[in-house]
Length: 355
Image 1 (cartoon, one colour):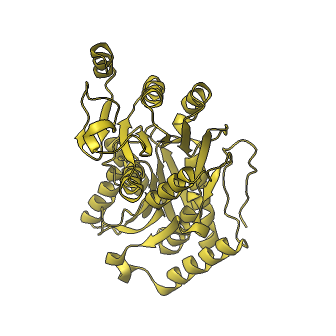
Image 2: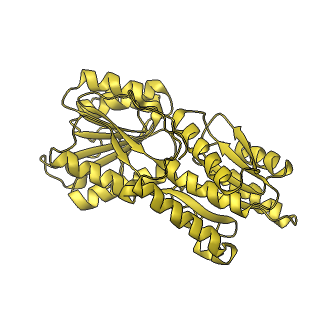
C-alpha cells in the first residue's frame, strides 16, 4: 500500500483488523492477506463489514464469530472493518475489491445501497448483505427470519407478564426491526390479547444510556417484561431491569439477535437467537462450491438458524405451560401451519399476516 493511501486510510478512521494475526497496519499489503497469515494466494479471501462494535454480545459479535468460523473451517484469509458512515461503506468495499477479496459479508440493512454500487463496479466481487433488500448477480441478501423467534419471545412475554404490559426497545426503525416487533406483538396477543405492548425507538444501535432511559420509562409505565432489538445498547435495557428488581419490583428481560442469556443471567428469561456463525459458514461454503445463486438466502426455524432459547439459569421461572406453548408454536412454524407476521424488505416479497 502506498504511503499516501495509508495516510488517507488513517484520516478516514477505518480500523482494519486481521483476525488471524491481530491488527493490520498500513504498509503491510492487502487487509487480512499476504504474509501476515501465512496463507497462499489461492486461499479464499473473506471480509466482514459491521457498522458497530463486535463486542456487543449480539448482532455484530455473532458476525465476527462467523468470520472466525469461516477462517478455521475453510482455511480462508479473513479481515474485518468497522465502518460508521455511508462514505466509509463505499471506501471499505473499494478497499477490499481492489485488494483482491472474493466474498464480503456486509452485516446490516444499511449497507445495501453501497453494496449495489460496489457490485456494479466490481463484477468479480460477491457481496452478501445481512437483511439486505436488493438482488444483483453478485449482491445477495441473507435474510434471517428473526421474526419467527421474536414471535416465540412474545408468547413468553404474554404468558409471563403479571402487569398486563410488556415493552419493546428498538434501535433504528428499519424494516427488519419493525418485522421482529410486529411478530413479538403477535406472539403476545396469541398468549393474551388483553396485554398492552409499549414500543420505543432510540434512533441508533449503540447508545446504552438512551436504551436504559427508554427501558426505565416503559418500566415506570407498568411493563414488567422487556425485549430489545438493538446492538450494544441492549446493555442499557438489561441494566434498567436489574435496577428495577433491586428496587423491589419483579421484572424480566428477553435477549435478541444472539444467545444473550449469559449477559444478564439473573433477569433474561431467554433469547430470540440467530445462529449467525453457522449461517455465515454455510454461505461461504456455497460460494466456494459455486452454489450461491442469484437470489435471496432465507434462514429460519426450519434450518435451526433461528430459535428461542430459554435461560437455563432461570429455568425455575418458566412454567411448563410456557415451554409447551413455545414448543408447539415452533413445530407449527416448521410445518407451515403458523405464519408469523413479517415485513417484506426484499424486492418482490409479500407481507405475511399472522396465522
